[in-house]
Structure formats: structure tokens, C-alpha cells
Length: 484
Image 1 (cartoon, rainbow, N blue to C red):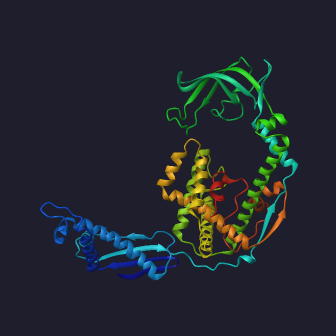
Image 2 (image 1 turned 30 degrees about the vertical axis):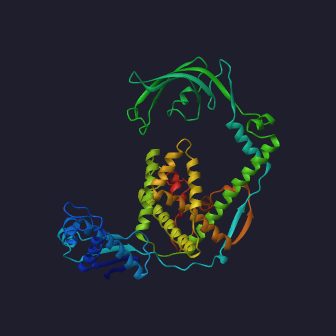
């Protein structure tokens, strides 16, 4: 094997690898001898078929296998000998000239191919004991418990009928019969009797519920709406429709009364036990937010600390993933970049910076995890898989089968676990100070605070803060994910 470096520019590398014809021929001979005892051909006793005859019949297909395996082995050997770590799977380019490849398969020529890749950048890991972090913590107060109970009373609220002449208001529940028509003809699924509908819940077609506000029990209302362009049933998408609606009952919401009966209804022994359980749940929520804020602060510090060249392809792949999500969400919401107070060029620049931040943090956390022997056990991945499966009640088997048949999907479960374990490892060594804050301060988005501060020139290009108009309704989900 002969290896020649044809490109070394920044992180980019390109190697030309030549495998001699006699080297390939030797591997083919070895392969022929391996299968000699397995070949069954008419006119020959088992195991007695001459190697030359086997080669005549199976030589081309076996040589193709030999070439494929030789490329795999030699490319890995070249990387090992150079002690280089590709940032992604190297791109192998075999000769495009069909005649050259034909000569290789026929065992008449050397195989020359190229391998292009970018290497993982090298950088020194900082001393984490010098890293100063503030962990925000909030105490659970009675007002927080009362707030949670208030939310429960709304979830478990009941409805009591209004008077016959009382008009329906937003938030009321109406019982209706309706018949839907498109161009005068009824359509499948467009009719129902005794259908409960909470006005303002936006569970029906856009504009449907608004036209029932002000109606009374016994009223007949013609509701005119259009199906959304992206409606799931193709023949209904974008079509205008009319619904003949009969209002049979109007009822106003009544929050559940907080008493012993309400506590029993939720499965608690008494009101005190319910408050105790809710206090524990709120404390767990506060703890999760505290850890998330600390992690965000840590990632920001790491992003400020490390500055090195990034593999372009990794950044391109990350950007395309983010950009696809951003444009999809804009399309679904019917908005443009101008509606979000920006331009496509400016948005691309912002999200490119976010992609760079993600890749940088991913490389940093990966290096830290490797050097500190952080690993993820199969048991931890299985627990994450079980949690994911529980998110799809009724489809557990389909979800389980999907992950078993898609190793890449299992890797995506492993990634967040590895990341969190590395973050925990760093936090254990860092200088962390607890800071008492209010609930509002705990839940405040750090980016909101950054936007409120006067802008200063920065010596280092960072992922920009999102603008106050949240042009990121389209991109916030993509931007929130850092190094996973």
C-alpha cells in the first residue's frame, strides 16, 4: 500500500492510496481458497473443484468483494498510521474511468483511489476548577402551590347551563348539531350530533368558534369558514365550506372547588396530602429549571473559552438541519422573514453562527468526555428508550421496533445522555455558587436579559442573541438545542 498526501489545508486532508495489483491478486487467491470447500459444481466432487475453475466462474464477483474490503481496510490503516481523527466518515472516490476499474476487477491493474476528510481540531482542555458558575435556586412558597392548584381546578372544571336567553361567551361550552357542505354537497366527516365544543379552544376550523360567540340555546347559525391549505384531507384543503349549526345548550365554566372532595377526586387522602404532593412536584420542576439554567450558563462559558477552526462539512450539515426546521415552521405559519423583522440573508448569518456554536460545543464536550472516560451504558440507553416509548401510548410496539431497526435513532438517544454526563462531570469540578432567586427570575430566559443590555462590540464572533420580536418563533426550537 502506498499513501500520498495530496492536500493538507487547515483541517482538510486528501490522501491518494494505491493498492498494488499483486496485493489484490493475493487477497483474491486467499478468498478463492476459503470458498473452495463450499463450492458445488456439476462434474466435480465436493471440495475438488480446481481453484482456476472457481476463479473463472466467480472471479469477477469475488474480486469486487476483495476491492471493497481492501478499500475499507487500507483507508482505516492509512488513518491509523497518520494518527488522524476524521471529523466524519471520509469520502472515498474510486476511479471514474470505467476501463481502469474494469482492469482492476480483471486483476490487471493497481487500484488507486482518493480519500478526502476533515480532521478533528486539536485544542487544550481548560482547568475546570477555575470555572465559576452561579446556580439559581428558588424556594417553593405557598403561592406557588396555590397557583398549581388553581391550574388543576381549571383542568377539572365543570360546566353549568346558562339561562335560555343568555348568550355564549368565549370560554363557554356549547352542545351543537352541525352539517357541513362544500358547494352545496355534504362531505364525509362534516356532520355530527351533540358535539361538545369549548369556544376559544381552537379545536375546530379557524373562525368556526368565533361565529358561535353570542348565540343562544335553540339558535340556528350558518357558519362560513375555509379549510386550511395544509389540511390533512387533500380534497378538503383550501375549500370554502358552510356549516348549518344548531345550538342545543350553552354552559359556562365553573372551576372546581378546592376541598377534601376535590383532593379525593385526584386520588389523595386529604387536602394536606394533595398540597404536599404538589409542593414536591413544584420543587422537582424548580430543580429541573435550575439545572437547565446552570447547563446553559456552562455552555455559554465554554463557547466563550474555546475558539478554533471547525470542520466545514459538520457546520454545513448542522446549518442545513436548522435551516430546514426554520423554513418549515415559517411555511406552516404562513409567515416570511420580513414578517419576523429580518431578511433571509440576515437570518442565514444568525443561524450559521448558531450551527457553528453547536459544532464547537459538540467537539468540546466530546473531547472532554473522551479524556475523562465518560461513557453511556446500554442500560441507560434502554431507560431512555422506555421513556420515549411511553410518550406514544398505544404505539409502543411500533416505536420499539423502529428503534431496534434504526441504529442511528438509538445513537440519537445516546447523545443527550452523554452530553448531560459530561456537563455533570464539569459541574462537579467547577466553582459553583448557589444564588437564591424568585420563581420569575428562575424561569426567565437569559437571552431576554441580554437583549435588554446595551450592545457592546465583541472581539469574538458568537452565536447572536435572538431579536426581541422572536423572529425565532420559527427557529427557537432549533436554536435552543446546543451540542446534542
